[in-house]
Amino acid sequence: MQIIDLRSDTLTRPTEKMRQVIARAEVGDDVYGEDPSINRLEKTGAEIMGKQAALFVPSGTMANQIAAMVHTSPGDEIITEITSHIFLYEAGGLGRLCGVQTHVLKGERGLFSPDDLEGAIRGENIHFPRTTLVTFENTHNRAGGRVFAPEELAPHLEICRKANIPTHLDGARIFNAAVALELTPDVLVADFDSLSFCLSKGLGAPVGSLLCGSEEFIEQARKVRKILGGGMRQAGILAAAGLFALDGVEERLARDHQLARILAGAIEKMDNFRLDFPVESNIVVGRYLGGDSIQEVVNRMKENGLLVNPFGPASIRLVTHQDVSQEEIFRAVKIMETI
Ligand code: TLP
Image (cartoon, protein in one colour):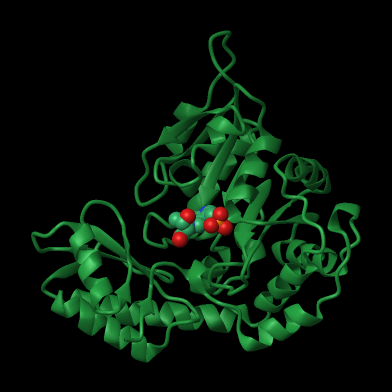
């Protein structure tokens, strides 16, 4: 049985062409700053994002955690949305690695209101921790791949700017947001002090993320990466894959989004599922309307050749990516209909 894997866009495997690029990659010791492929990737990434500098790191999680460690000091407070990846899915790194406390704000589909943000920022008081970072996510994973246009985040960023509080964007899927909005990513990240984006999701590279920001921020981030054991040596073989992944990204992600829309259109017509969120990028969240537990539903889909992730008590997440074809999406729909 041919398995259709829609658990995540992290599951993409390097194409034959990418493997050839990896095999030929120029490498050096990156801890000495001597890996030409990594240097090229960092320069290219910073240029694409319109930032002064970038740092290649093993994962999106490490990129976010390094950003938090650079922006804050132990005992500070970070503000983030209650379903953000940095709060939900980074194994408590904010507490464990950064030693900060997290002030989570309840959002509407991944974004809290400007008023709530303003109210959460700590004033000067002997009893209070300092608020030293506010984080955002675009696209927003837990909000079903929600895309934020620059004007939606502008009021929040203005509040942070006025209060002199740095902002970090978890832009793991920022290219998906850019493609959905038909904008270039630099426009979406211009007003953030730092951002991370993943090469290993819809872009199709096997490993890696880039953390971007000012020269000074990246210099500090490089040190923190070393502390975390993320100073890699001849990792140019990975950076070369990352550079290759950046090429033609818009067309590939536009196709992923189209497949997600096909899937969403089919779910809208199903009796046993309904959409939890409007589909804006490559993530589709379907709510099961039958009586069985979501784990049973996921298991039954697996028996029929469709892999999906449970997403909360009654929903599943389906993510489109380059390793899935339109024909497989049609088959996935058939499997869902029979569950
Ligand atoms: N998300 C993974 C899981 O961790 C949930 C997935 O399958 O979607 N930010 C966002 C918004 C993410 O969705 C992810 C990965 C990360 C950061 C972390 O990236 P990695 O997996 O490279 O550490």
